Every structure is written in structure tokens, then in C-alpha cells.
Image (cartoon, rainbow, N blue to C red):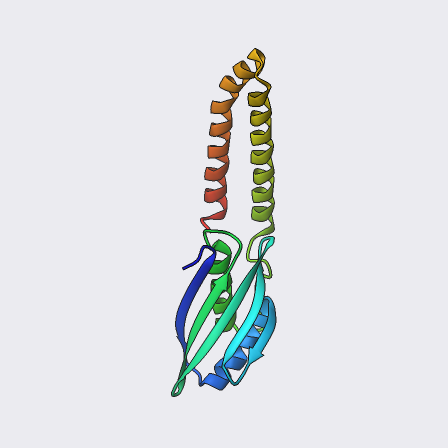
Length: 171
């Protein structure tokens, strides 16, 4: 499997034509339907996971009164967090099609979590740039500061990711 790709197979308790309509409706509530081919029983669409786009491809196979669904998702991150989240949200949307109170998440990430991750990324980037600047300067004072700052930077990054994982859960 390619980096950023996740797949999931499931059965659905409806015939293929009803399954096709349900998948199309569920994908439309959480993202966008790009292509729906009733003859081939395939649906392609996209959703968001934070700031990245997640592409979803659904293949439906008739099995009498039920259907087999194969979902493939592709995201920009190598851990496939966006792809896994897109599949999970599609399944959740399909399970709640009859629930009028259900509102699917459009981004798949809580705003506070996304903001914390973005701020953390910017901080790490700025710290790395500062360390590289001190390192390349070659001055004695830069080396002394570097020796004192590196353990602090490492500890701060470790604490940041531990707090983020505890607060927002592993994604």
C-alpha cells in the first residue's frame, strides 16, 4: 500500500442500487462527489482532513440482497491519518443517514486541535531555522547558546507532542 493510502472493506445490508444511493448521499454530506458511475457501481469524491484534501473511491459489489463495499482513500500524509479519518467519517455518515440530528464533520479535525498542530509546526520550524542559523554562524557565543538550547528545545517538543496526544487523542 502506498504512503497516505488506506482501504476498508465492509458489507452493507441493502441491494447494490440502494447502497449506491446511500454512499453517494453520505459522501455528499461530508464532502463532495466528483464522479458517480451507476453502471460500474463506483463513486469518487473528496473530503477534508484539517488543511489537506482526502480523495475517496468507493466500489460496490452486489451480493444478492446485500452489497460489499470497498473504500480506498488517499491523503497527503505518509501515515494515512487523513485517509483513515475519511473512511471512518464516511462509514459514520452512512450509519446516520436516517438521523436528522446528525451533522457530519466537514474537516474531520476539531478546530482547537488543528490550531494547536499548526502553531506547533510553526514553532518547530522557527526553532530549526534558528538552530541552523546559530550553527552556521560558527561563532563561539552561538555554539555556547546552541549547547544550552538544544536540550531545552528537545524537551519542549517532547512535551508539546505528549500534551497534544493526550488532549486530542491519537489520530
